[in-house]
Image (spheres, rainbow, N blue to C red):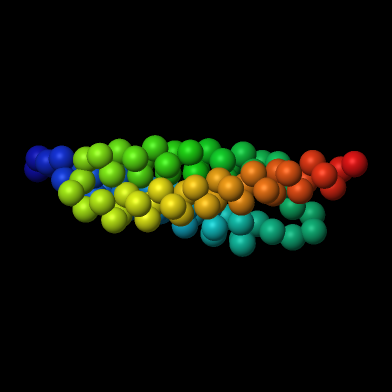
Amino acid sequence: MALNKGKIGIIFGITSILAAVISVIVFYVSRGPNADVYPKITIFSILSIFGILLALFSWVMSKYKSIGIIGLIANVFVLVCTYLLLLAMSIGEE
């Protein structure tokens, strides 16, 4: 089974959207008063950077640009929320 450039682009796009969805699921599953936030911040940032890279590859390789754009927007949103969470944690420790 040979994959052509378009199919690989679609797979990258769906995987980038999946990275954003996994970040949201991890956020809602592992919350609570005793949860350690810094490992979650690391997980969110790694997943979102990985998702951004996959979305960019999808955007270049696929003829369906909307999948790459949706993945890019979702992962940038997760990365911005992660940055704001890190900022809030650093302000709260003072």
